[in-house]
Amino acid sequence: MRFRLVSCIGRRATLTRAIFALAVALLSGGCGDRPAPDDPGLSIELRWLRSYGRESRADVEAGLLWTLSFLGAALPEQGTDPLSWRGDVVTLHLDHAGIDASLLPHWKRLLGALKASEEYRAMGGLDVGRFVALTLCSPNHYYALTGADTSYEKAYARHSFARERAAIVESAVSHGDRLVEIAEGHISDIAFVAHEGTGSVTRDTFVPQERELLDVMANGQLRFALYDEDGALKRTADPVLTGAGKPSKCLWCHETALSRPFTGRTSVPGYVSLAEFEHRIASQMQELRDSRSKLASRIDFERAQDHTYAELLYITFYEPSAERVAHEWNIPVAQVREKLAGLSTHTHHEFAFLGAQLYRRRDVDALMPYGVLEPPTDPREPSAYEPDLLR
Image 1 (tube, rainbow, N blue to C red):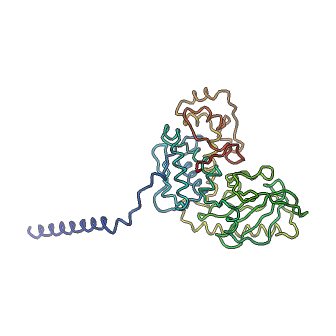
Image 2: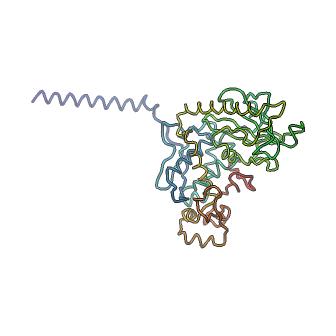
Image 3: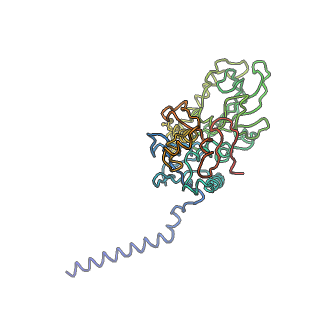
């Protein structure tokens, strides 16, 4: 009996010492290993408003992650999830999204403006589609959030471009000829510049008037920047010269790939042949795939079609059904149809499953029961209005 009592006392003393040692560790050296608390200025609550019958929370998550990835976020696979849900509201924690520290002040200013809106205060969050429209689809914000150089000269100097250029005289993008410069080097040096202009390359009368620069961000995603003749950033390409549209349209077309010429088949003497141009593109694309395969990211580049979920977030926002608007306004669908009576409807040209009676965002926002931040007039094409909440 005495032996059992002594053993019990011994174990209790050992346990006490262990607890004391753990407490000392936590209160001293261990404190430095704990993650810093979230910065409330880098978080925002977004409302999921079901836009079509089969849309799921997983679809919305995929769309948001691809949106952030297109904006340069590394989205590390390990660590705290940057998305957390409460019902149909998802909180975005940019502290955990793997964003370059130098770009966080831009994010903080933008989120501050979004959270100051009447919609955010009245509804307890921002429409997730409006968030994508005001980030990915807004050139002024896209350039700032991705760290695009404001000067073409500075952006160009970051890469080593070959002296030989490729001449495209049959372009699916440009309305005329275009000249393409190709950067030399490894993954961090992959870049292309397309010069759009007037005149003929073959007749040596081509005059460049604007440039479209494509390069690769550290997270493996493509970045697009448009520059005018003086080298200043442009919100959209000149529709007289090209159908390139805004950076968001470049992303829609390229997706995650370095695209070869779609229609070009004619090589111009004195320039890189189209066969050689396509070979260089294929070689750099393989290098990009290899680099992406080594990234420990929440984005799986092998599931490239998942980027469509990001597009659906802004498409269903710009072209909502009555059911989606009912979720936005938190009123019955019958009342929504009554309020929207007389407005024209349409079917989406690409996603017919969204329904045959879709409205236009500008018409819906004009009838909003609360104030909203106006998005770009169009998500991909030149817009009559482009917001700049970072000025």
